Length: 482
Image (cartoon, rainbow, N blue to C red; front, side, top):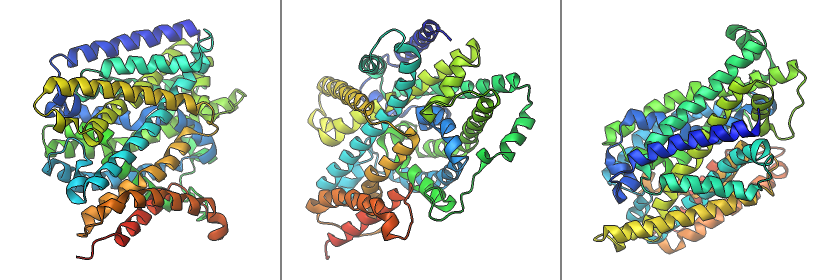
């Protein structure tokens, strides 16, 4: 597929996104930007959140990861269902009862100002790195297959993408994103289904026959029974449960969409629907990964150095123009969905939690809007810098890096909320930042020396749980005696 055709597809899709943004952002105000005026229809939010939950990581990294890990990721997905149930029954009622715009305001009400600032700061760090990981993955693929052809450097490609995302989220915020995510989810899922269909056609194989081939191969391995393996099935399941709690339930990005629903009941319908739909959707992505590897072996296609490049390499070089166009539009959808809601949530959290603009300009809508827009620009610049930095260090599947990093940055948030919800203790608020810093450091030390300390045991994504427990232990140490 020619770089010119890829570029043309990119421009057409971007034009569609800007059209939706123009329609949805008319008469938008600060409440539209932050919580969509609480008028978002829950079916639209639920469907759009599928794409936001998947992003470029699922779209590219998970199919490529199948060659190394089989279907073991599916145990994490099953854990998601339990985690989403916790969010639906415990966290959403809390957020709606307190009528929160930023979910981290709860920490101030429960513990104090230092805990509030610490929690929101850890979210900012987590989301900046997480969104940058996702964007880096997608942009690096487009760089290899399109922009390198025109001699455009990687840093300029990054700036181009972020400027476009900045423009269409600048005014409407979450009100716009609820609807653009719907389009992006549609194109991502269409790309996967069409790719599988074309591969089956070229292999002259029926769907049921291919399912049988995948099932009989080592690629479909779901359960890892070696306890010392980082992908041991029970570790994967429990990790998935806690990953969904922190990366959705304790994440302003994902919760901001839920808080834009009309009421708690609608938000709970949204979350329940999302949890059930994500199981078959993720299974389809894993199946795609297996099909790609079978296709590559059948036609002796050389494997790319990075497993993340397997899907794009086959879609763009082997399957024809239709598959290439569908893949590119799905890829661009993944890129936009990775960054647009992240940029909006970062702006919301920094504006409300750190700068407290809603309090400073409570009686001046125009000044609040002006300052919020400057924060929006600043967050875009930070993400640009981080993405460019990743080019120097990327050497493994992004999905692995993302979950590993989340274990360190979301752990303190998990500890804060668990301690706040399930104990009645108060803490010495001034010492909370020290606990939040010490917990990830101790977690890293345990992980680094785990094989020697624990007789060959390797930590996987359960680092998140260890980090949360260390945070809780630290909060118990600094609790007040009365």
